[in-house]
Length: 202
Image (spheres, helix red, strand yellow):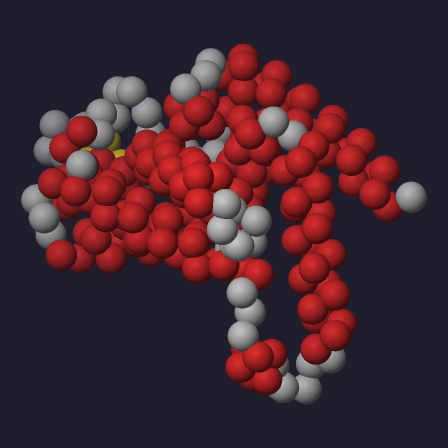
């Protein structure tokens, strides 16, 4: 995710989209919070859903918590250390890991398994319910298989790089590893993913 130039100062200095958004957040401009949400919410949600076994409700909580924490702690963001995207995804990853640790302690039934009859009853828009459910279960089972086959950091790198399209540098900033390490982890993750998915399709 390269930075986009949005303006220049009178002295000719480049003002990027990141810098402009950070400045508005630090000035507590109300529109900046909505812009922050619009820019990052969908990607954080995809990442959290993948890491939390398809639990949409928990993923939504992660999105809200991440945006709130990022906006509140924006003074701590240092553009010299990371891109804004890497910093925000780093917060999201920490929120996800907290949720995973909490689940391990509670050993509770995940929310995605608690589907009410009302939800099934609402699925009457002409779509074959059984076919749609089967497709979702197949996709969820493949993601679950990948999570089982990959180490935690491998799965994170795979999602951040291939789904969210963060650069190797940004992924390294999120997981606190070097770019070289990210390339190595991503290569290993892709190899394991191919082997697992090909094996499942046999």
